[in-house]
Length: 248
Length: 290
Picture 1 (tube, one colour):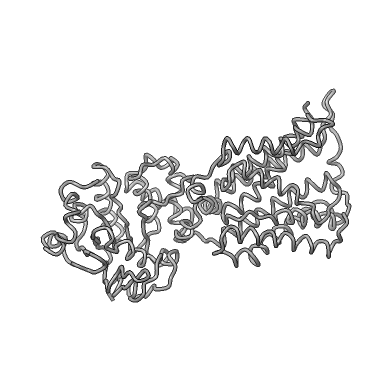
Picture 2 (cartoon, rainbow over the protein chains, first blue to last red; picture 1 turned 60 degrees about the vertical axis):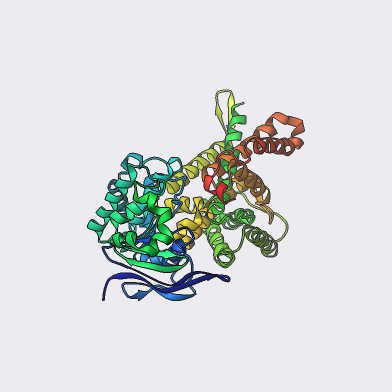
């Protein structure tokens, strides 16, 4: 059995509006996969369905062949699927370290293990300088990195990231890329990257899926996506900024 | 003068404990638990009923009984209303409060039950020309010990970390896998323990208990949690302390005009809320959700 996170033939409507139409996305363990698409393409809806925040009308989500439909998000976390949030969703009253430790506690780790994982994640993402600060004072970009560190401490088999590079500056984005590669190398975690920064996706991902108007437009290597006429017309008018130096 | 200050500290500590008990449950559930007063009342009833067994055992029974009733409240009523809005929870807590008051009337009678709990607390200690009551000193020590104990529990333990996270943003805490029912149950139990401590101090002062025993202090402690900042545990304790200390000082300074104590108290409350609508220590996450 292939170790894989799969969302197969997903259909989702909000009232009369069909936002996902028979979409299939797969992430193998140890692989970084990109999910691209213009605003309103259905990327975040697909992510929410995979992570258990929304329910699909039809289709199936599974981890390593085990169907996880109907499981709430916290149970999916314990089953090996973690996610980051677009807004970070940190606890403002807690310190950076406490925020990160909670990711492991929530996944069922002991406090000793949680502290060790938190320190490892903070070091990997270059966040040790802010580890004692309260989360409330962090920049937008740093909040996202702390959110990523928190997700990593759950020790996930698969990690879904919602625009982790948004708000990062020119120094932070390469650091994020290095961190993603390090996570891939050290933990063997499969990652699904929803990102507008096509440059980052092209550098980090071995495969990309491109969504447009709720339909899957392309699946393949990122360099082929950038040469695909359908993708170009649907998306790249918006994203070439990311390709040529980053839109952030 | 020293007695006045000690009384203020003692009252402040007592109301701080009551407000922290209410604030703990509000933090994790957004529930303003009006039935907290009935937890205080059951603690006092249990102490008076079991005092013949000796004070330590009586206190132990009261603490265990009050914590058990708090947990029973959560399991039998509030757990079933997890998806309900704050207004439904508020009405439910009114219902629980009135149900318990009537139950106490049926079980213990509507008239006060008297009993001597730790009569040595009403004695005085002399320091040169100054005499101070033992009750004030012991209340301050008890409040300080419990507030520091709760602070340690909340700031330095894994359970405390989960309670603080749930108080800050319950939904995100749950999504991360924090065991919500466990955290809420623990908050109710701690709230019950704090209610028993308040019951002990009040019953030693008053010497009797009736079905409405805990209503007055609960309402004023609720005012304290609002002044301190809804959703902030430190704020709740601080706000409760401020209300209790202010009542004590006003009682002392107004002398024969002490009938106006609550008038002045609520004037001060309104001024504080006009200057700081979010309370003395605001919970940023709560404010953003509001």
